[in-house]
Length: 82
Image (cartoon, rainbow, N blue to C red):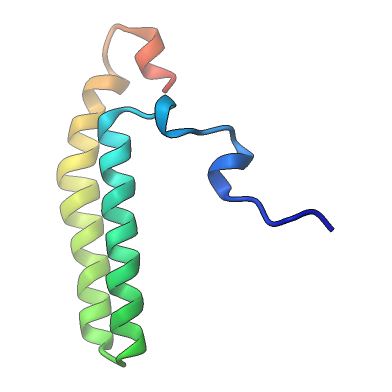
């Protein structure tokens, strides 16, 4: 059996290939996962749900998607493919 690989290794993603906003959302996701795990371990289910809600609607929808729109709808094909 092969050693377990990280998901980013499977698709060839490295920190150097990510844009600033991609690195930012990944860091926010990691923080949310850490805090969510702590909340679950403390049986604070409402806090865990609140963390997921704020990450999805606050970080992903309000910020990340708005920032990423510039790249997705821009004229630079290289930027679109990142």
